Structures are given as C-alpha cells and as structure tokens.
Length: 131
Image (cartoon, rainbow, N blue to C red; front, side, top):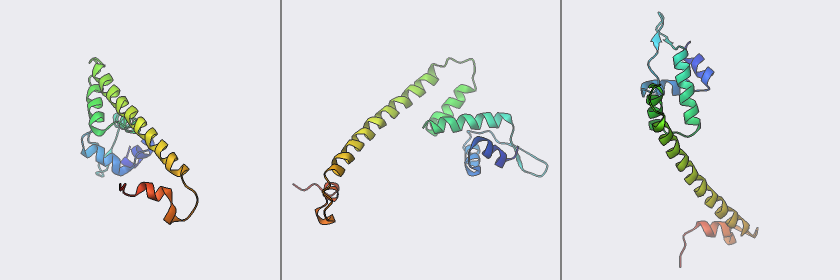
C-alpha cells in the first residue's frame, strides 16, 4: 500500500508516517517501480502499535523501547510492565496536578463578583502577589 493508504488505515498523517520512518520507529518501506514507497502488513501492524502507544501518552523513547521488546517475543514481559508502570505513575501524578489546578480555578472563578475588570478577583489572583 502507498503511504497515503497506510496513513488513512491507521489514522495517522502522512508527515507523521515519514517522521516515524525517519526516526527509526517504522522500518523503511520498499519502493515500487515508480519509486513510490510501498508498505505492507508489518508496517500497518507496527504503525498501529505506535499510534495506540502514543494515544496512551507513551513518549517516543518509551515507544521505541516497547517496540524493541515486542520484537523479541520470547523475552520476559517484566521490562514492558516496568515501562507501563512508570508511565501510569506519571499519569497519576498529572491527574493529581490537574485536580489541584481545577480546584484552584474553581476557587478563583467562585470569587468573581461580576463587577468591573478593575475589581476582578480573577485578574487580581493571577497578578503578582505583593505583600
């Protein structure tokens, strides 16, 4: 299949497919007699894996490591678990941070008295805290 077909099949932009190929995450495609890239089922599976991992927020380095591990089917999956667990811990930290942000935003929005901008508690809260 051509690059555009691969992109559509995986919900990936053509530029992203080229980036993954250039960065070594996706092996180079063969070429047709007309010098078009020609991708096969292995490319489709690998790109689908990359897309799903990226959708779950794994970094490119983590994806690279997961692909290396996935290529060695006989290896223990302990290393995969370590990567996934580390990512889960990072996601959980972000959730805590986002919850704190949400609560602070609710607090400052709740302090709004619908007056003028000059008296706006939101603007005041976002400004420098001078004692």
